[in-house]
Length: 277
Ligand code: ADP
Ligand code: MG
Image (cartoon, rainbow, N blue to C red):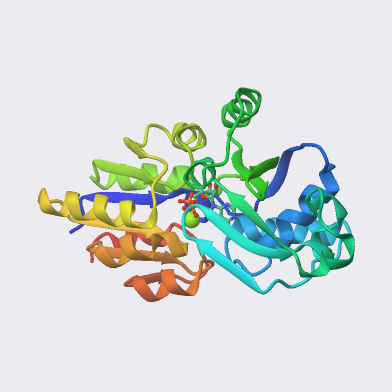
């Protein structure tokens, strides 16, 4: 029998029905252009955040051309190579011949603060203040950079699943004592979610996919039997490592393939029964 429950946040305890929150665009971009640039980079990503950005661009009737080169950084964001002719004149660097515009390439990065740091992109104190405000309001933060320069910040809001609090309470009643929230998001949005669920115990933020798996392994070594509940590519290694991997049927294929159980309708109530396995 399982004695420990670890949950992913986005798309698991929350609905994953994201909406765009506060947007800040820096010169030379305006809000709309920022959304368009981010959507171009995110077009080929399956992440919930990526799908939100692309949907938002489409709802603004923006054209999102396909790109050739793209790498997804699980748990942190995307890096895309985009032709300058696709981005627009503002993306061409000074002194470049305009007639060769279509052959030039710009690097667009969309993702977490950590991804920006890893790519040596400077975050000014002004922007830090802005990010702190988004953190305080529980918004997930996406940063957008082009050729090493930060050009905007997108806040994203999510809502809890209606059943999350009940399910945690039922598990507590059934004798489960150890709970954890494992997320790739920052600690403030994670704490906001944990607090709305009544104290959840351990909160581990800023986790890469392997960090989640290592956390599970560590608990197992200490003699615990751990159930992991998740929906994303970033949860797959942890789902595979756990004693009882439970995937949200609304989530990504790789999560479902790595888990023992799939909650077909994505209703968390199913895990209360599953704990006896
Ligand atoms: P969670 O554990 O909450 O499901 P993830 O591990 O999927 O979150 O993502 C962690 C963080 O990495 C996100 O909050 C976001 O800042 C960033 N991120 C991940 N994937 C993307 C993406 N495709 N585009 C932009 N940002 C991303
Ligand atoms: Mg998730």
